[in-house]
Image (tube, rainbow, N blue to C red; front, side):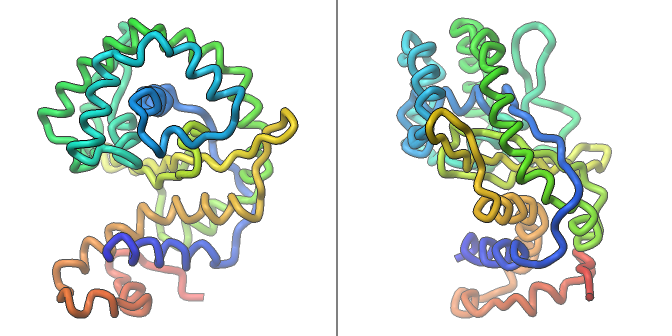
Length: 275
């Protein structure tokens, strides 16, 4: 029920007017792709639905020797026993930073907002296995060899990017957040409204967006279908805290009656545009 309410609010905001004009930095993220590949090798359904064959065939061929690597085995176990799947996967990824020595560590400059499915023990255990996979499977080599393919996605996404109006978003939510977009075709049909907060107070919105189409050797994004999804995922950073604030004060009997009117009255949390 809680997730359904969050989605309802985000969907409502998706259709508000005022978009078109500014561009957001768009890129692939090595950390996100690293986790995507491991969960794909582990057989996670949501990371095995990508239909962009040149990409999936390349991944499956390059990493075939590592299907039984400890990181993959742990991912399979975590998915089955702890429900670590879907958005919990990029959540882990975006709390990592490079050590500069060919490995990853947790970013101590970030507030710890990693998905609660990751217990301290699981985080520590998996980080060790991930770093071994990163080196042993020569992930850097694969990622660097994928740059041309990545550019095709980024170029195709420009149609969507040119229609995002950051000024509308900043005025609506009274925010000075840093907006970014991470393209993630290996996420298949799933998109995730990721965001992080720095200990300095800076807020980084970096939704993970899939949605690419592959037809006759060409990558494309459907503007009418994808633009609302991007807006929707950006909105999660603001809708989710509202629901968290309200949730404990609502009886189970009446939670389904929670209305948009009540939510939008919380101007002390988010000063929404009044026009």
